[in-house]
Image 1 (cartoon, rainbow, N blue to C red):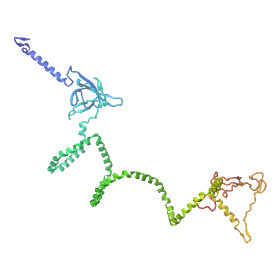
Image 2 (tube, one colour; image 1 turned 45 degrees about the vertical axis):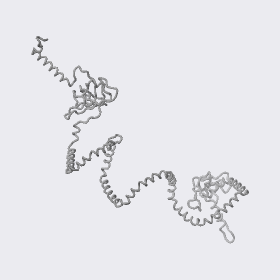
Image 3 (cartoon, one colour; image 1 turned 120 degrees about the vertical axis):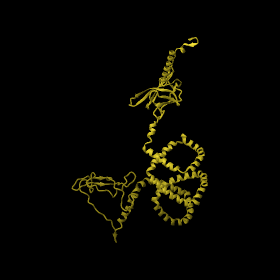
Image 4 (cartoon, rainbow, N blue to C red; image 1 turned 30 degrees about the vertical axis):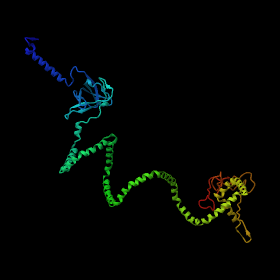
Amino acid sequence: MRRGGVSVLAASPTMVGAVTVLIVIVAVFLAYNANTGLPFVPTYRVTAELPNANTLVPGNEVRIGGVRVGMVEEIEPVAHEDGTVSASMDLKLDKDVEPLPVDSTLIVRSRSALGLKYLEINEGTSEQGFAPGAVIPLAAATPEPVEIDQIFNTFDEPTRDAIQENLVEFGNALAGRGPALNEALGELPEALELLEPVMRNLASPSTRLERFVQALSATAAEVAPVAEVQAQLFVDLDTTFAAFARVARPFIQETISESPPTLDVANRTLPEIRPFLAHSEALFTELGPGVQTLRETSPTLADALEAGVPALRTAPALNRELAPTAEALQRFNDNGDVRSGLTRLHETVDIFGPAVRFIAPAQTVCNYGTLLVRNLASAFSQGGNGGTWQQVTVFEPPEGPNSEGTYSAEPADGGGDIENFLHYNPYPNTASPGQRRECEAGNEPYQTGQQVIGNVPGNQGTSTADQLPGQG
């Protein structure tokens, strides 16, 4: 409203003051509520869970990529069934952040060294996002933050003393070396250009440098207890290398010079001799048991070789007779009568074979044939001018029923004034097929007070008279 070209508002000091106070009140209200968001501005609200609020307070900023995108509206503790406690905070974010990807992560960071904190969100790449009012799970609160006080706590008194000592020693190392340092700094750019690909390879995950450092740490921990032994090793190595130094020229030098052509020849020849080496390995593997047995048989082989030398000297004469002997055997083989006789001999051997296999152990095991001939010879070897005679010992048969001296109705089995028991073994065991391996004839024990007909109980062994050691 204007009166005579002058505004009524401007003409009234009271109205001007009232409008000014109103503007100041609105400005103060907006400034006071700026930290909690401007009124009538749409927001995107979600709830986040953290293992520890880490001195966060309502009103702290929420940032993405270092840019403020909202604020922490409220913080509450949450008790879990396993007894642990975490923090739940309501976040009021700008509308243009919506929707926040579900694979996003959270971390509490320090805003200053005085303890002021903010919540940083690292946006994920998922196409799915959290709806308004959703809860960001506790698993998204990674990685574990490192607080400034934790860093300061690493500098305890021993660490400070060590740092002080290092600074003193570094000062001693650099003192008076200005020109050398200048020259080193002048060469440093070229060295860094060469160092760049090396550091790139070391930083590559495929290099696995972290695992190498861990293994090196474990190795150092194992070597520490034997440090004195290692020191002595270096002393001994110094002695060894001093000895090498005396023969370095020309011997070691020539060895190093000739090694490359030698390796070239080996590379060409080793594939060709590989079958030979494989066959040699198989040969020596098969020879192994024989070589082990040779240790025990070598004395016998030595005796055989000593006895064989005279025989080998007469071998030429034997060899000269082998040809006519072979020719004679060939003529003998071609004779029809001989073949007929051999056929009949084979038939005879087939007939007598079972009997021979049964009778042979009586001699080969028990030596009974030799004993029979010896006893027969001794029976007729004693005598006088009028002839020879046999020695006979007469035993009176026991008296009683069914005595061996008279007719009997059954084998004697006791009775009478004298114990009368029959002992008779018509087929003693001689280690023949189907029999127990023993030489029973002549070795039977006399079983007192009982009747024994047939083989006596127990094994009587294979030892008889006139056997050689180990026979039987």
